[in-house]
Length: 459
Ligand SMILES: [Cu+2]
Image (cartoon, rainbow, N blue to C red; front, top):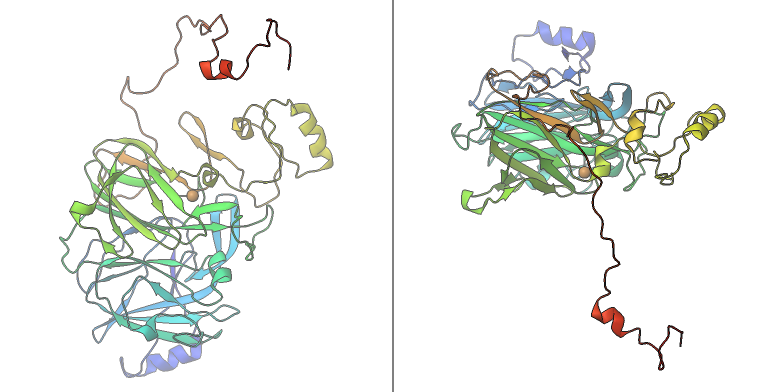
C-alpha cells in the first residue's frame, strides 16, 4: 500500500508550514512510500501532458506534484525490506520503501525537479542513466557534485530532451549500493501520445543478489558469483505474470544492472527490438528475435502483437539464472543412488544438500530441510505439476476478453481441446539399434597399418 509520511519535516515543522499561506514557503514534496511487492496498476497522469502509463513488474510509479511549471518528485534513499518471493525477505537498500525504487514517469519536454533525501547510513548520489542533461546534474559523486551525506537532501533539475527508456542508480559507493538493491526505472513518454503507442507497456530491471542461505543481507563484496537472479528484486514464483489482452500491442522494457549479460527469451512470439537506452530504433533497422541479449548496464525495448493466447514462458536463457540459491560446491550425483544416505546425513548436518541422482528434477520432490528464509532452488507449481524454475522466470498470460485496464493475474490458461501435448499409450517398441560394428572411416584405417606378414601385432 502507498503510504504518506512526514519523514523529514517532523510534526512541528509540518505544523508550522501548514500555518502559513499555501505557497508562501518552499516545501519538499510529500514523501510517498510503498510497502507491497505487488504490481501496482499503471498510474494515469492526473495533470501535465497526457501519456499511456507503464506497468512496473512488482513495482509502482512515484506520484509527483506540479509546481510553477515544474514536475517535482521526491526520492528517499533508505534501508528497505523486500520480499524476494514468498518465504524469503531480504534486507536491502532502495528508495521510498522498496527495491527497486519507484518508476519515474514524465514526458518529453517536461521540466523535472527531483529531490533526493539520503536516509542511508552512508553518502550517496543518483545518476540518471541515459538522460541528456547538464553535466552538473549527472550525479557522479566527486566528479559532478559532492556526495549527499546522510540526512541531507539534494535537488536535481533538468528538462527531458527526448522520450525513451532510462534508469537511475547511485554513482557513489556504487558496487555496494547496487548490490544492496538501489536502482529504479525512468520512462520519458513521447510528447505525441500517438507516437509508437502500445496497449500495454511493462518495465523491469534485472538485478542479482548474493544472500547466503538463512541470512537476509546481501554480501556486497561479491563480484560475479551471485545466487539470487531477480527481476525487480523478485525471484520466481515471486515475479508477477504479464497479463495481456489478446490483440494488444505489447512493449516490454528491460534494463540490466547486474554484472553479467542476460539473454531474455519469450515463448510463443517473435518480437522486434524497438529501442535501447540510446533511443528508439528506426523501423527499417529493427530485426526479429525471440531472444534478446541485454548487456551489462544497458536497456532493451521489445514489442509484439499478442495474437496467440496462452501461457507463454518469459525468462533468462542462462539456465542457472532460472534457479535460486545454489550451493556451487556440490558434485554432480547423476547415476548415484544416495537417497537413503541423504536422510541419514541430514540428521547430523541439517543444512546438507545433494544433487539429484537422476538429474535435478528430483529436487522438487525431496523435502530437503533448508535454513530459514531460504528459497528452494526450483519451485512454483503449474497446472500440470512443478514448473522447476526459480530466479528469472515468469509467464506472459495472453487472454481473450481481459479488460483494457485489467492487470490482475488471470490464472492458468485453459487450452482448447486437442491442443496440449499428450502421452502415447499405444505399443512402444524399443528402438532398433545397428547390429554390426560400423566400418571405420578410411582415414582411421590408414593410420593403423598392419605389420608385414599379416596378423594384429603391435609395432
Ligand atoms: Cu540471466
